[in-house]
Amino acid sequence: MPAYRSSSLFIALTLLVTAAQPAAVIAEPPEVPTNTPLTKPAETLVPLNHLPALQGDYFKLHSETVDRAFHIYIRLPEGYDSNAETQYPVVYLLDGDSLFPILAANHLFLTYDDQLPEAIVVGIAYGGFSPEINKRHLDFTPGAADGIAGDGAAATFLQFLKHELLPEVESRYRADASKRVLFGQSRGGSMVLYSAFTEPDLFWGRIASNPAFAPGRELFFSAPAVAGRDDLRLMVTSGSADRPELRAAASEWFAYWRDRDNKAWQLEMRVIEGGTHAADSTASYRNGMRWLFQLADEQ
Image (cartoon, rainbow, N blue to C red; front, side, top):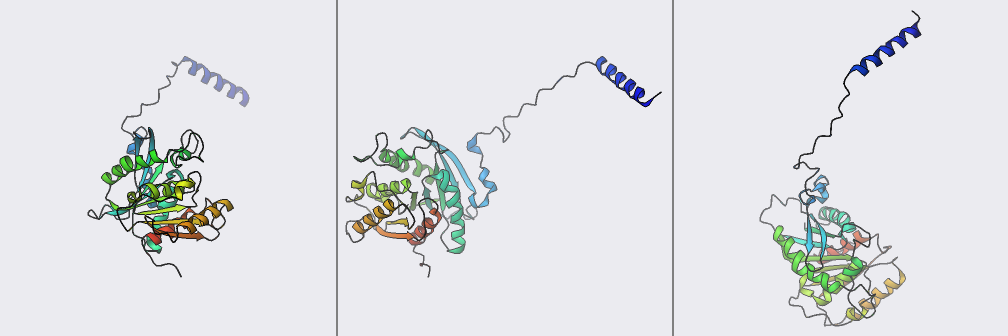
């Protein structure tokens, strides 16, 4: 028999046998048990544990004050579990969506190179950059005559920090409440200044990186609330390549406050040489943290 006829016969027999078999049943995919990592609530997952420089914790906190939820990321110090009696300074990062992965990891390297004390680093995140989710323009802006309608909720956000977030963090982790630090960049820097003028005792140390001084200029040139402690510290950083209007505003503000006696905090200003508006937060953090903890200036 020719080869092609043999092949044709084989194919025909195969099709006949297949047709005689019962139709195969397509099985449904197995149901995923409810206790697998795929379906655990997000609050129980800590995927950053696979990034050791960011290892720590996460929880979602719904604020009764602002009626919104925040994603709270925690970087715990190296050796946290083995030093059960140690309390640590605690650094609160505004704009945690972007600044937590940058600055929390950088803090670890500063402990190596600069002997900066270890700290608990807290990222306060919105969970996205879209205006529907991210309300920094609202939360970090003081109510002011020169403001934009719909903004100006810094007072409410500060109450969220004071009465909800700080107590929650400091009840969960071994944070030294006497060594709280607040860091903010740009509009977040404005929020740092707002807290310094209205609730000076709430944070021991503050770093305002390239802050905006408007809206709210009148507040930032008025007398701050009276502080109950005399060891408060505030650093303002300004990138030499920041936008000219922000550089001018920072210089004017610092010149106004530098020699006044009614400050509620010890004040320092640093120019970050070559620093731009958004890309040099690590330099602002390093300068600020070294000054706050009174590490020797680099030669």
